[in-house]
View 1: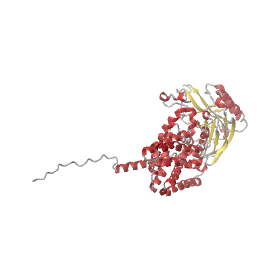
View 2 (view 1 turned 90 degrees about the vertical axis):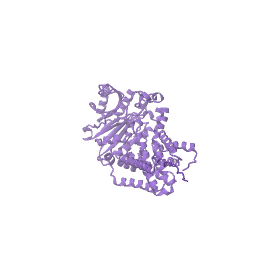
View 3 (view 1 turned 45 degrees about the vertical axis):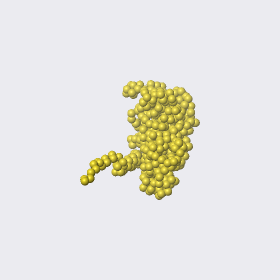
View 4 (view 1 turned 180 degrees about the vertical axis):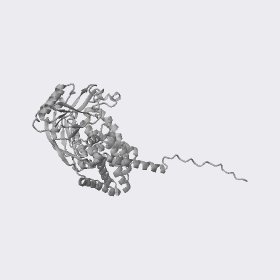
Amino acid sequence: MLSDRPRWWWTAAAVPAGALPALAFPAPSLWWFTYVALVPGMLLLRTAPSGRRAALEGWLGGAGFILAVHHWLLSSLGVFLLPLAALLGVLWIPYGLLVRRLLGGVPGAGRAGAALVLVPAGWLLSELTRSWQGLGGPWGLLGASQWQVPPALRLASVGGVWLLSLLIVALNCAVALLISAPPARFPAAAGVTGCALLTGVVWLWVPGPTVSGELRVAVVQVGPAGITQSVEERFATGERLTRQLAGQRLDLVVWGESSVGSDLSARPDLARRLAELSARVGAPLLVNVDARRTAAETRGAPGIYKSAVLVGPLGPTGDRYDKMRLVPFGEYVPARSVLGWATSAGKAAGEDRRPGTAPVLMDLPAAAHGAGVRIGPLVCFETAFPDMSRHLTREGAALLVDQSSTATFQDSWAPAQHASLGALRAAENGRPVVHATLTGISEVHGPSGERIGAPLPGSASAAAVYDVPLAGGSTFYTRFGDWPVAAALTALAGYCAARGAGALRGGRFRKPAPGPTARPARTARG
């Protein structure tokens, strides 16, 4: 241990070391950098002179990671992003302690082997905890950086994004061992080889999706003007772009999030215009309504909803999905009575949106495509949650559609990061994903996660048509879910139990035994 290292310099270095993995995500998209991006932080943590220092540096590294991956939120949250990063950084304390314990000093083969399993589990623990919607959701999961790597996407079909995160941290751990601990080179090399073999076996033996049909889907993207246009002007732009699609034999037309600013039951003129558009292009329209609804329309829960609504030639079909997982501060303020001041410190929601209560599947008209195709709608950052896409797939969705708007963060890394999530959700479930946005980036991914056609960049105001392959069957991940999570948590629980039992056996937690009772000294008899 480098117990004499300068305290302030090394502690401060934890922040930039923790931020390094952000370069692997879009927009830089240096996906290969992920395999070594954690190494500087691991080398720092393993030399921490005490557990307290390792906890502090793990915390600071986690805060640095959150700041780097979410830096584009500064325009919305302002200075509130700093305490938020500090709060979430606490989740990396167990990871920091595990790195110091298992990689510190001169680890033997046994400890190095344990590190290759337990250090990734410690990282995954932080990802799982912050994936709760109230803490911002699963944005910036380490495995999501591999969205454009075909072997990684095939692995995602087996264990989801969680398996990718575990393997990436294991590779970084192996590299750190190779650099810092010569006696542990054998298990480190074995770890690298094991990751490579697993990837190869999955690639060779896990079948890819079998294409079973095709849909012609059009995406209508209002473009940059959607940021400044009024609600009526935005609708008119979408209307104009949709008219240009007439005669292209479409199965579905998708508009972006908040493309309609009034509830269609309150504005029959808008419903009529949409129905006329549907008749003109010969396909239903999936629009997104961001509007207030009355108590009568919502069965006693009035408020503002974000809803995917399917409209056919005769008007709204009755299929409506209300967004269930809302963006903290962006669409509602958690504990508003306490944190309501955030509305003055940044661009937090002035009024809470109301969440939906259940996922919805929508049937496309049989005349458009043949029978049996159902779509599973999601709204905005709901594509970040692996469980939502998996649930829709298990219920029968053949196509996943995400309606999004990152207009507030248009000139940042956010649109590219958001669009990339479609590749992970597609590969996990073997279902194509259409990511349609109001202002870009819109793109489509096939059932293996591959990109279909050219994306619509943020500078485009256009309508594009995509031939989307459909696939049948079910992936291992869709069938068995988050088994890597269960395995990692079980390993961590076993380690903690073994450590606790060892401490008890060693007497660390026992009360000290009372000393021998003093006996009165015998007096010599004369």
